[in-house]
Amino acid sequence: MTPIADDLRVSEALVGQAVTVTAVAAMLSGLLTASLTNRVDRRIVLLGFTGLMTVSNAFAALAPNMATLLAMRILLGIALGGFWSMAAATAMRLVPPTLVPRAVSIIFSGIAVATIVAVPLGSYLGELSGWRSAFWATTALGLATFVFQLFALPRMRPQGAAQLRTLWAVLAHPGFSIGIVGMLLVHVGHYALFTYIRPALETLVDVESSTLAVLLFAFGVANLVGTLLAGWLIEHSLRLTLTLTPLLIGIAALGLALLPEIQGLSISLVILWGLAFGGVSVAWSNWATRTVPDKAERAGGIVVVGVQSGIAAGAAAGGATFGIGGVTTVFTVFGIVLIASALFISLSFKSQPRSGR
Image 1 (tube, rainbow, N blue to C red):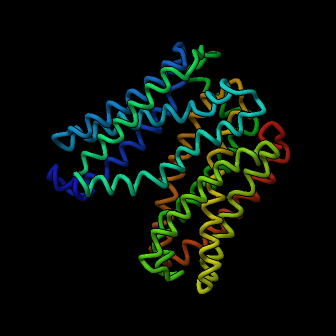
Image 2 (cartoon, rainbow, N blue to C red; image 1 turned 135 degrees about the vertical axis):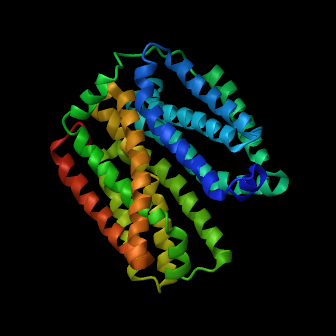
């Protein structure tokens, strides 16, 4: 943020709003994509989002002022929200039904890989040749992705009517609204914790700065492994996966809050946390497509909005709790929230066999 702020002669706080506008655009795009593209071949829609992402990054690299950068980040949010709203529904059409959980886990492993690689690589490129080089790198990557998708994706005709009113039909489906509540609880709990992972490691566990980067890298690797393992676990039981992931994160959070002096245990708990969270997005995307398979794209859009809302609410709730009692209180309170959400999910899904087994 600092190099961008210096170059464009604005405050770092204003540059931070680039993240906000991206998230808001992603929420709206995720919600509206299926309805606004209901007559368009899904291959063309996916290629359009990849092209939009590529163009937005290219013009962001050329941005002469903050207004242009913000506009390009809005376009990026539209591309990201639209793509992720369609990801699970697209997997349903590309592989046999028995392989959908594994296919979704492979798609979502891209997020985990980006978590590991993107931030350090972006920082390195920024230090090496300026912040614009990071945007040029993502432009090149987007262009390569577009070419690959152009040859790899088959034609996929739109299925069913996808009007705005179908969103209400999805929400009215038995069990879907209850599931969304469970999903929100999990994401609020996780992001309240994740916002303060660094202070927790520095103050509770007393991790040295030289070790901190290594531990955060291990968290990212565990997240990738968890994403891939989730596909296998969902094939055996979706309900177990939905319940187990927040339970393990909650246990890890409470362990970090209550037993910080045992450093070896704390490091293991951080890795367990990363492993468990790797399965969260995969599990909830699979849950949405199984619950309303005939309206999978609309359900995916609602999931995107729910996740983004959970991130925002979690960060806000974590900040309020941190102000009251510090990082120990954050990890205690939201560790309990996550364990309670696991119980809620387990009990709620007993009577909803279509949502999980």
